[in-house]
Length: 81
Image (cartoon, rainbow, N blue to C red; front, side, top):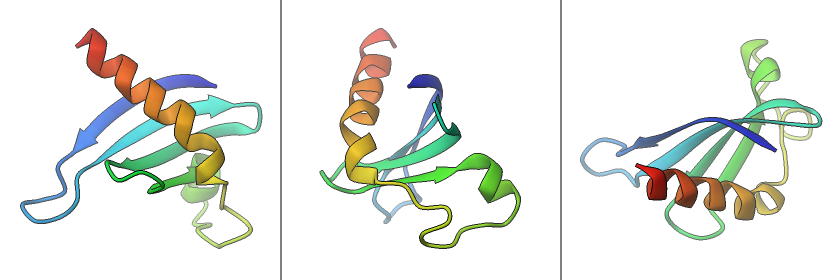
């Protein structure tokens, strides 16, 4: 996995904050949404999003498989800032 960019979103004044990670893996460019709460991670393919595809089983990826490496990338980015 290659991290392209990471951004933190506070989600307004009442929503749960989250990180957005733009990254590439063997199957293309993806965006990961990672909330502070463990096991709250979503991953979508960027090209499919751009084409309007948000369907389950078409543009859905195993967040539980990506979450550990995405959380490490967040931690590393916070350590260097």
